[in-house]
Length: 347
Image 1 (cartoon, rainbow, N blue to C red):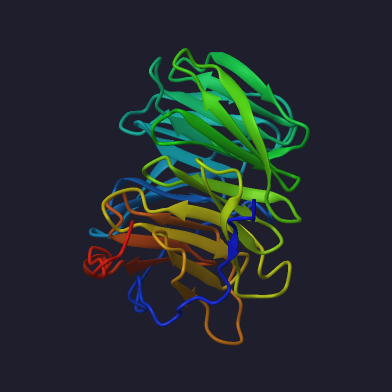
Image 2: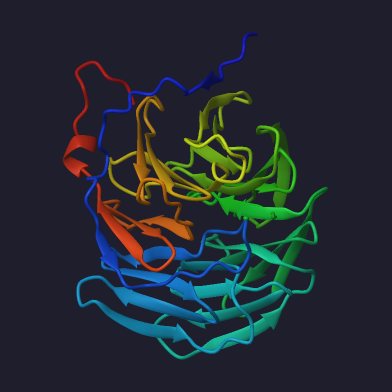
């Protein structure tokens, strides 16, 4: 059977999924580890984002233009952050974790052992809210919230950067809570079933490109997932097929400048966009219906590079925020365009 994968290299590039003008907010998102660049979250309100600044975690309201500290003077500088289900969690270089209720003063410090916490994700489950910590010790550790009781440890043949749930590995749990994908310090992609009683069973191992994976994400329908790799590609799968749906290159050729660092799907509505960031200067918006149209958004002046510390959609998918070296940039999504479907189009 021939491969179903196509290389999305001949994009229609004259689209504007987001308007090119932006608002700049005085929020400095700091990078602790040069490869881990997912330090900005907008999970609660379209008017508020949460970010890491040194050993502090801060909430910024774009309407009032006011900052509020959520965690101050931590004993470590966070390498990762997650916000969800009313909780905030950050992880550090030596297995440190700090949990907090967003709306009150309850905090719980924890050491999960291992080494660098590469990513944290918070997901709903029939048995309660869970936190998944992807660590450089080749594990994803699963905890219940708010008790922080360890449910299980999932072991891998490589460090996990992101599980979605996130091994520098990274993992990510699908929105319907039934699947998890994880990537790490190899080109392998690990897909899991998540059972109703909370067990994680690996059901497939895919090959992305030729280098380590640093981020992964599910679309809002739990039918597709995307992986960002350090060699400058985004790979997308439909869970109904083992072949890649598509492979999307970054703009810059350099393995460092053009490394794909973070990937997100729009979380709601009929916007249907895939967003990913490069190591410096470029953020991309891709039509997640066809994967044939892309807007390459240069967030730095020409002939000058800016490091990108995080990207995030608002919960209603009407805006995106991009963390750069000394500010957070806000762009408006053209939701009218995204809610218009050409005659005869299929989604």
